[in-house]
Image (cartoon, rainbow, N blue to C red):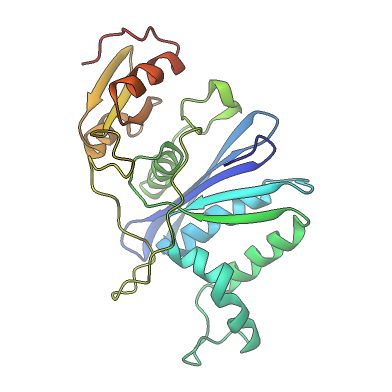
Length: 258
C-alpha cells in the first residue's frame, strides 16, 4: 500500500535499433500533490542505458526527500537486479563482472549509486512492473520515451496530481521479479490481454478522448487510441468498476460508452 507521504516514481526507456536513437521518460509524484514528467533522448544509445537514465534523472529531480519512502516502478529487470544484487560483486571485483570483463554502463551505475547516496536517509523501494500491461504510469513513461527516441518529444506535464491526465492511483500488483530469460532479455514479458488475476470478470480498458468514452477489449486497442494524446485511460474488471472510473473522470456514471 502506497502511503500519501511516499514519493511515487515511474520510469521507462526506449531505443530504436539498440544501439540506436533512444529516449527515456519518468513521472515523479510528490506528497504535496504535484506531478512532474521528465524526458530526454540520445541519438546513439541502448535500451538499458535509457532505462538507467530514467531512474537517475527522476532521483536527481528530488531536492530534499528527507526520510520519505520512494517507490520506484520500472519494467527493467536489468536495472533492478543491477542496483539491488549485482553491484556489490562488481565493486568488490574492481568493476569486473563474473567473467572478468569490464562492467557495461559503469558510468551510469556509479551515477545511480551517487544519487542514492545523495538522497539518504530516504529509502528507495524498487518495484517491478510488467511492461505494456496497461498500467497508466508505466504506459505514459513509455509514450514519453518513445516520443524522444523518434525525435517527436511529447509535451511534459507539470502541475497538480488531481489535474493530471494519467491515473496514478492504479498501481501495479506486487509481481515478483521474473527469473532471467535464457536470451538475456532485460525486460519481462507482458501479461496477456484480457486476463485477470483477481477473477473479477473480463478485463476491459476505457479511454476518454475528445469528449468520447470508448471501451476496448484489449490494451493494444486502447493504446492505439491514446498513444501520443492527452487522453485518460484505465483498466476495469467489472461494470461497476467502469462506472466508478467514469465518476473519477468527472462524468455521469450513466455516460454512454462506445
